[in-house]
Length: 116
Image (cartoon, rainbow, N blue to C red; front, side, top):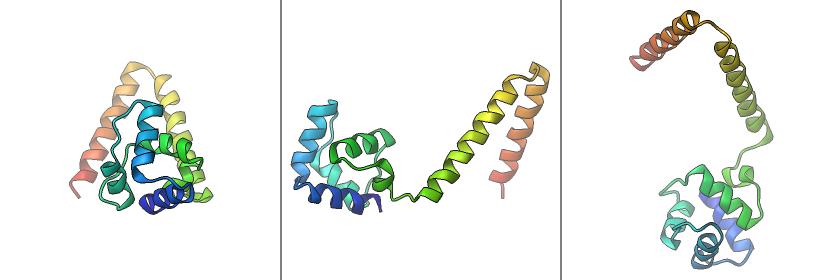
């Protein structure tokens, strides 16, 4: 999906792979080649989120558009993030001993899950 959306946004703006790569490098000082862009578009390589954000700026589209995420998916991810943030704040308020118990429990649960 990302690759298809990237290609569509690029073509809609009349950009070639080479032009977009040069624009990216001149704007962000990065080493993005037209070959790498082609790999993104053809689904042979996944970009880092920073690259996605930068490409969205250059192509004047949202990150969500490039990643093909709908509003329900975005809200679900945001809720997970808020819950994690809340748990971290609660963990920070515990005594060192209690925090260690929770960390050990998480490590144990994670290990058991990995063995399944």
